[in-house]
Image 1 (tube, rainbow, N blue to C red):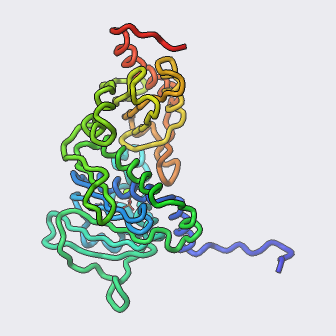
Image 2: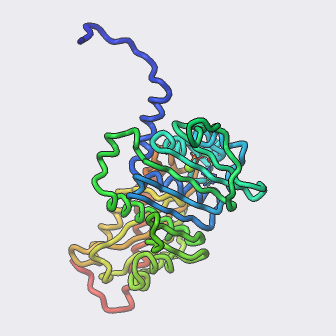
Image 3: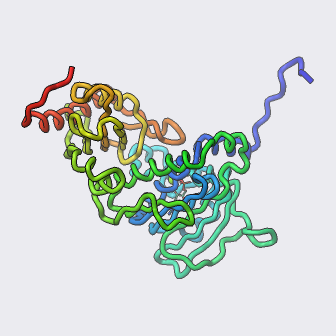
Length: 359
Ligand code: ADP
Ligand code: MG
């Protein structure tokens, strides 16, 4: 029936709140992967391996060799707003870790079945635990929910099974597992290029042919060669670590960018890290693209990998739950400064040979 007057206002049950928040953070399998691999990097891992079933919708499994999780912390691991990284609001302005909201594992546990196996270097044995809706659950009916001792290597294995099993609308929105898998490869590729000290593997579960495989202690350029093509890696110009001008910006930039009329140019590529976080910044991309139009044939696109470092106090990473968007001070000056740093490299590379700027 249609009520005549206003309906009473009631507080949503906490579980409903958490499930709504979860689908906002875990938009798709690749978003869950991004959170999980950031956790592995935060844990100091030098090896991160991913195994994926059906584009991540059936299974995401990530194995790292990081510092592991203490047994005593396992009950809180998947609880929302539980974190080992942030203690006080004021610390947000000096965060050096990827995580701080304590929402990723919680969100994943609200829309999939989570299993964790972890072992710290100090612990004699590992621990295995299962989670659902933020809390420990028994592995099977009749068993206890407490973590059980388990054989394990140092580090952590997190498995998320049946993503969105309880969010049918979201689940139906994924048309193709291979499209989701490609998005996963894209995220892992970018993190592997930006974190070449770590060895990366990504494969479909059951396959012994990894789609991504990089050695430990590699370099950005070597990983670009492995994950894109050797010819692209050879063509790229290095943007050496540059202090952006004017100096009051207090920011540095480095990266690898394609040269004028590079043979890769048609397809292009774009990845931007700000304080090591992979972010979307349509404004910076647009500014760089338009600077390149003077150097590239029509219909060509630059391949650009840039890493910006700025004072964490000047950047707001807390704009969106997925942290994909960031806001920072002096945005327009900063963008101009980045463009001119890249432009200097392009100009430098192209003054030595006869080169005509396209108009
Ligand atoms: P956040 O990263 O914002 O703290 P998460 O939900 O991603 O929140 O993770 C919760 C906590 O679980 C982290 O603070 C960390 O202590 C622990 N954790 C998660 N993944 C790992 C991992 N791979 N290795 C070690 N600790 C982890
Ligand atoms: Mg995290």
